[in-house]
Image 1 (cartoon, rainbow, N blue to C red):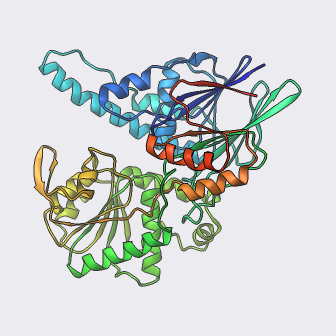
Image 2 (cartoon, helix red, strand yellow):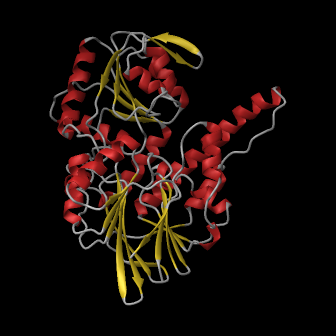
Image 3 (cartoon, rainbow, N blue to C red):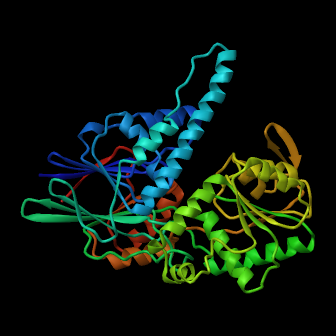
Length: 464
């Protein structure tokens, strides 16, 4: 029977990753990511499925980032009753990430409906609630790396370490078709070699087809060591000015990476021993998940934790849950590091820290992640003189430092290294990248003589 691959989302863009494998009566879904965009556009994209959800046998989650797992509660609301598989670390992280997403959905719809009532407009519904998110996350079945499982009739799956975030996986599907079999690899998202905390991505042999991310398909990252050097310089210069270092950070992986490097710098006595705060209940919970899954970390980090030198629990580090404690930091005039969400400065406690510190030239805003267009974080990167926070304009006098070397995605050279280890391949499908980046990787791979395709949303191809 013919084997088809349908690209449901995350093509020519970096959100909403989801792809459907079909053969006879077997249906396997790879990821069910949330599409992120303007409110109305996002709601439509996340609630309209262009396939019969009830016929899907299994869902395989590559990792716990929202653009890969965030639509799981909607999938259940639409009638999905199949099995869900992921690593145990991904399951535990999904519980937190989906629960937080449900909370945000509820808060957002309460805010919108408050306005709609006043304007006599129709009321909206949340995409999903915290309760629905929790119920969906509990359905995930944990599997180990290299454990081969049957996910549908004639379709078997094996997960390998992707080195992207804790528990992230490259999915390999072995699909039997009469007397022959097809091997499909799904490397979305793929990590980098030499990242702290994590193992390097696993190279996969013997693939026929490869679905590959292209987030940085046309770019080259600075070495990860550069991040540590720039972090040291920014902290030392700010402490000399008697200022504070504010680090807006994604709560999953990036916050833990920054903490790891701060621990290294303190051990080396490369920075002074000033207070360091992780001011985010979600980042605190995620860090606890990290500490409960040392088996997913690299040898160095595992040995540090087992030897009583936990990189996530050093002396000058404090995790803050309580809102009063968070507010108290703004009255504390000592030099300090504050790591707080959200990563793009669009919500969360970082906004309150910015309000209180953005106008002081002694302070530093240290940006360690991607800033999308039209976000507050991007305006800070661009050093716009006046920025608006909660409807009020503030003058940006604080120093702005950008560290791009922290990226957890493979760059163009690392993507090529991965592909070259997979050869020969019948065909490569490029997904999860803005059009410019996907096109750059497409050009490079076709120049090397490979059969490459850039699918569009809802395109379906046959695998032979």
